[in-house]
Length: 445
Ligand SMILES: Nc1ncnc2c1ncn2[C@@H]1O[C@H](COP(=O)(O)OP(=O)(O)OP(=O)(O)O)[C@@H](O)[C@H]1O
Image (cartoon, rainbow, N blue to C red):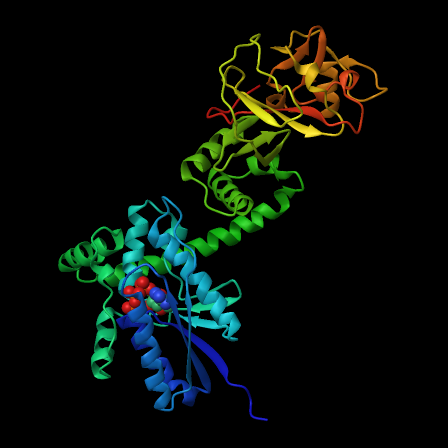
C-alpha cells in the first residue's frame, strides 16, 4: 500500500499574500510528497465576502485541473461580534477557531499563514504603542502549537516586495480587500502612513522592528522558563506561598506573580497591579487587591489566593443600625450595603437557614465584643473571637454587620447562621452570606 501523503493546510483569504503562498506550496507539493488543503473563512462581514469565497474556490479548481494535489474547504461564521466588541478581535478569534475546526476535520496538523515581515513590523509597532512588554513585542511567532494545530508563518522574514515579485512572475489574480484602506483601523493607519514615513527616515525600520520581535521572543521565553522554575516550589493547594515569594528579588517577585496570576486567571493581568502587589505584598501580612471579573487577590496567613467576590444585585444606602428590607418569602436576593462595604445575600436552602419570618424587622449592628455564637446543633455557644480563631476566619471576612432579631444573634459574617435559630432541616429556608467589596487600598487589619 502506498504511504499516505501528509496534508498541509494553507489559510487563504483570497488576498495577494495568501494566494501567493497557496500557489507556492501547491506548486511544490507533489515533489515534496504532500497534499495541500486550502482553507477559507467566510466572515459574513462585508458585501464582497461571497465573491472572495467564489474566487478562492474557482482558483483552487483551476489548479486542481492542472494536476496539483489540492483540495478546498471553507466555513461560514455563524456568530456575530457582541455589542461593544472590537470587530477585528472578534474576526481574528473566530477565524482561528474555524481554521482549527477545518484543519482537524481534514487531518491537517499544520496550517500555514501568509504573514510577512511588513505584517510583523506593524504588529511590533502596534504592541509598542500599547506599552507592551516582552510577550507583546515578540509579536507573531514563526511556529506555534495551539489547540492541536501547528501554525506556521514561512514568509515571516520575507519583505512584501518579494511576495509582490512572486505574484507578478506567476501572474496570479487575487482580491483587494477594501477594508485594508480603511483609516479607522489602527493597523491600516500604521501600514499606510506611519511605516512609510518611518522607512523614509530609517530605511532599515522594517527589518529592525522584525529583529525587536525576535529579541523579545527570546527574552519572553527565558522569563517564562525562569518564572516557572521559581514558581513550582512555591505552589500549594491553597495558593502561592507568600513567605517563599518574599525571599525573591523584586524583579523575580514581579515575574513569578505575573506567571502565576496569568495561569490562575487564564489571561493577562495589569502591569500596574503587578507592580503594586510586588511592592505591597512584600511588606503586608494581610491584604486584598481587586482583579477583573469580580475576583480579587488575597494575602492571608502567608498565602496568596484568587477569590471570587460576588457582584451586588440591589443597592441601598444603610448605616450601621438602619433597618433593611428583608425578604418576606423563601426567595434568593441580595442587598449592597455601601456603609458596610459589602453585600448581604440570602440564598434558598433546606438546612442551616432561617424562616423568612425570623428576618422580619431584623437589624444590623457592629460587633461590640460580648456576643456569643453557636456554630452547630448541640455545640456550646462561644464568643465570636474564639469562634473566628478556631475556624481561622480571615479579618476581611469578619468585616460585615451582625444580623440581630431582637436580642437573638442570627448571623455573623465569616461564621454563618447561629444554630439556635435555624429552621427545621428539610424545610425551605434562607441562608445569609456576607461578601465584602473589593478594595483599592490593601487593608492591614
Ligand atoms: N478569511 C480568511 N480565510 C482564511 N485565512 C485567512 C482569512 N483571512 C486571513 N487569513 C490568513 O491570515 C493571514 C493574515 O491575515 P491578514 O488579514 O493580515 O491578511 P489579508 O489581508 O486578509 O490577506 P493576504 O495575507 O492573503 O494578503 C492571511 O495571510 C491568511 O493566511
